[in-house]
Image (cartoon, rainbow, N blue to C red; front, side):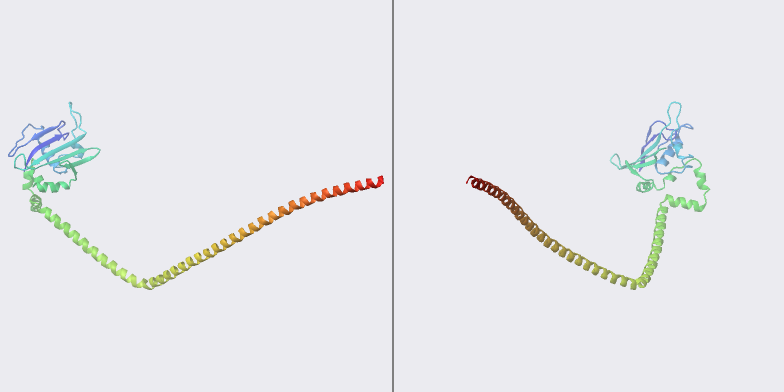
Length: 294
């Protein structure tokens, strides 16, 4: 595996986009003081997941942004990408890691174009044999510091370099999970015992509640039966009353017709009587007239 390409844009002293191509073997980058050689090392550390302010030689994350110059304005974002490639020519697999930072969104990491977390880089670096990446970058004064380290510190660094810390961390996590599971098991046992005691205490009340439920259900069933029985009787009474009302209405209509008929007949008889009375009066007058002529 080797680094094939390093791309920088707006990172520290690199205000304009810069791309460095590497090849297998040794590559030397030379230049005067202040040309940005150390910033290249910081860029590699940063894109591979290092966030230590002291190792990156900054006091805050905003120092990663290019601060501007007389000819180049300040950069709104810092971006570093590195292409890793396995030995084997052009068809060999490669991996593109990109990390960016802005004041608004903070840091973002992508692996082959897919958004990822910093913790996901551990798996990527493990796949590409980069677990001890921080030891692959040796800065000025770090050799003397490594010589002055105590045995415990040197052992911790060697464990990290050879990947032993990963297995130790997994063992610690497994032990913590096992301990948590044991504590949870004890808690569940205590809870089960408490529930068993509580069950014995409330057993009479549960039985009484069960009997009360049976009684309530039976009462509710009888109440529904009574309701439907009363409804049936009421509907039958309403139907009977409807029939009686229809019969009474028919009888009242017949009486009204007879009353109107008798009224017309009485009126006709009264008119006939008046007519007869007039004729009788006329006959009487005629008879009296004949009697005078005799």
